[in-house]
Length: 256
Image: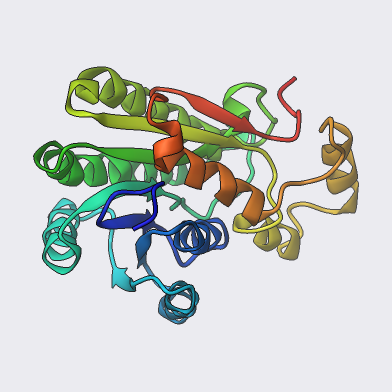
């Protein structure tokens, strides 16, 4: 294993997605074995694993329903058997959502997203905290939103649940630091990957919206998945060994 990571594996929750897949490939490039999870994208997950192994690292894909706390615990046990240790958990999973304003929001969708995203993260954290304690530490890195610093109208279904998860992250950082467990977030703006292409394809984000969004960003462009992956790899590595309870803003200056 490289000097950036201890022996064991990095786990990318949602590793079949655009951002999660980029993070998995970056972690392998930086010298870590990588396991990923997927919900419905088995073919995409296998392609990501092929990229990991092409980098000379071990990799595997695991189907996971984040709503099933027992399945998260079973995954921890399976990874321990296969790799010996999980040294980092990267949470890059998120619900497919619409873009309503609060007054127009469907309450059933709000409850579904809140349950899936917040409780899904808690299920993962509960499964891997004992593992980290038993193996000398570890790190959680959560893909969050720049909207927590500067709210974009119509994004409550994304930003609201992520705010709750970040509160849990800070609790973990404060309570578990004595066990060498770190917890951080990457606050991303618009990324040309993941859900963004889907929203454009569905017509929810048109050319006018895209141009206005770029004008709100100091760098006048959207991020790439690889730029997000670089930040994730940093927070999961020994280079960030004294960083915990933080949100690293990767938004091109949107929140300034």
